[in-house]
Image (cartoon, rainbow, N blue to C red; front, side, top):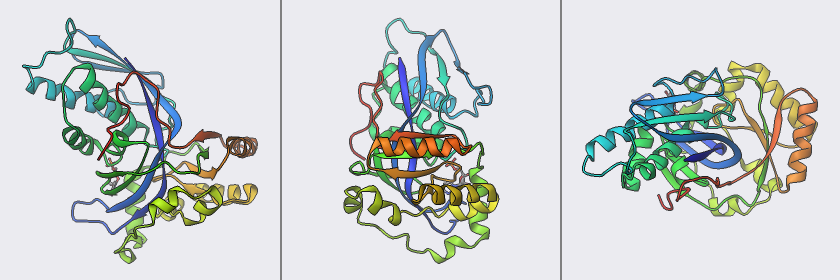
Length: 307
Ligand code: C5P
């Protein structure tokens, strides 16, 4: 079985004051983008093994792919009455071709994990309901539930409340991929130390339906990412890069998630491509992508239809 796991960007990300559990209430419009990790799944006699073409990625149980597979394996044990596929062993060999940069705020590990939950439900014939998969996803990480429901959703609370909405009319983005890995927990700590969440009891509730119908020029000025200030405090180099690119492209540039990926939006592919070429010429890797992408892979159902 071959799986294609898309990256995401947070078009809009508001963050509230830290709660007693150490997490922050979120309000985010997330959308998939056309940059993919590829995972292959094969039967194995026993155990769960992962290989990856990028030696920097851990392949042990700290990898969300392995953790997702372990959770589904536990579900399989509990449902002994339900057979695995005829002739299959009880083990799994997973191979990951890593293309989504780690520490980039693009949700690569979360997307991989969500795809594994959906795939093993099918591959092992486990018959798990949406609600059960969503619970497992939330256990794995704040961004994982979104990837069950893509390609465009409003995510709230810690990220586990997911409301699918229309894909943005603005269909293209230039992603700037600096060689900087941002540590997410540290970005939230600095957010707290800046006192940013205190002023934000109300994260707002934009007119999402209207926002989805805006072109790039109208949408960009409405977008906010509350994690930019702490991320740029941790990496002033990233803050400078954002300012430089805004100046050279003459348009608003936002950060995705806790960084380090920066993005701007376009209504046509050719403009996104020209911007990517211009940023790359100035020394930082950049690519053009389509927004709101649904991957073409071996899953019978790419997304769960309804939250
Ligand atoms: O859930 P996830 O593993 O992606 O979160 C990584 C870290 O980001 C958490 O350990 C926490 O420090 C921070 N976080 C947060 N509030 C959220 C989501 C994440 O403080 N809503």
